[in-house]
Amino acid sequence: MTATDDLVDPRLTRRLRTLADMIRVRVLEERCAELYGQMKIRGFLHLYVGEEAIAASIIGQLGPDDAVVATYREHGHALVRGVSARAIMAEMFGRADGCSGGRGGSMHLFDAATRFYGGNAIVGGHLPLAVGLGLADAMQGRAGRVTVCFFGEGAMAEGEFHEAMNLAALWHVPVLFCCENNLYAMGTSLRSSESQTDLALKASTYEVPAWSVDGMDPDEVAAAAERALAMVRGGGGPVFLELRTYRFRAHSMFDPDLYRDPAEVEAWKERDPIPAFAQRLAAEGALDPGEVEALWEAARAEVDDAVAFADAAPLEPVETLLRHVTAEPERLRHVTAEPVDEEVAP
Ligand SMILES: Cc1ncc(C[n+]2csc(CCOP(=O)(O)OP(=O)(O)O)c2C)c(N)n1
Image 1 (cartoon, rainbow, N blue to C red):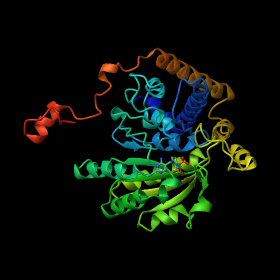
Image 2 (cartoon, protein in one colour):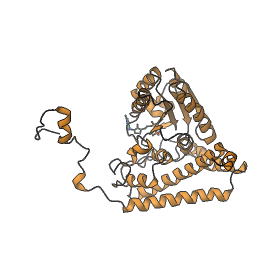
Image 3 (spheres, protein in one colour):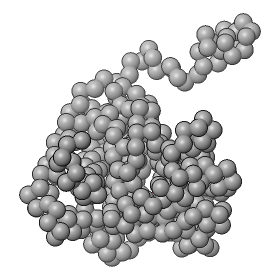
Image 4 (tube, helix red, strand yellow):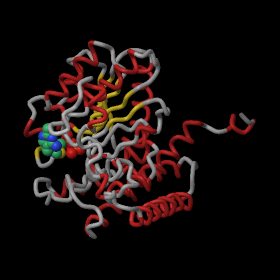
């Protein structure tokens, strides 16, 4: 530690990092949309544009031993967590150098090194996974670790949500549940599908501390996350946050987005967290407009480099395509202790 470190305000450093991360995610996502149009990225593609304040403000507060679990709208979460833009883009392109070896694509980014456990395509399916990760930490005495689980409000209508909340609360599992409420589950609005639209109230029926936050304001998200993470790390069991947000783009690239009033979309775009946060920091004298432009340029350079990397990366050779698809006979022998009949071995 040097004398000048004492002079650096860690909270300001974190806020500047949050702005940089939101910009990185925005640039990555907008580029993915372009690449989809060029058929470089195929299959499903769900973009996080508009929701960046959440991943940037929460994941930026985690340590390397914490874990993150997310949905199929997870490119930004992976990037902020520390998965390289190269590994993310190569995965989108289905290349062998992707973070999931090109097997997962956009919805299944995964990186054990950063404890980024997906990229999960089944709505609500990853909530029990998060509870399992947290339970493993608790049972093995790794106190102070947190698993942060991101999901949409649509997941709260799934059975897994209730199972996960119940067991996490009952067993005091160290999970921070982050519901990214963007008001629509595909074309289904929350108010047209749920009798209880107060999501924090719904979560609190499991005796879990729960509250709602403006997900478009990085400072508010960061303050809520700081408090919630301290509670979970301190052994208080799970906490639930509802982050109120909005996606500026359609549900996925296949969605014609006919169910939202364009005026509603425009009204939310007025609350775009990136320019608003940059202006707030500038008004405080924390950075000048030139520095903001430099952040955009750095993000574009990072994504340009990732696209070039992904373009040059190889596809997995045909010979190894069946690896990890079925159990290998050699491994089955250890499991069964019986000689394996090669004819019937899967
Ligand atoms: C169990 C299950 N049911 C249906 C789907 C199809 N599906 C994919 S995304 C989605 C909407 C989920 O909305 P939400 O949880 O609010 O998250 P968002 O996409 O808004 O981030 C649905 C119904 C699915 N993937 N899994």
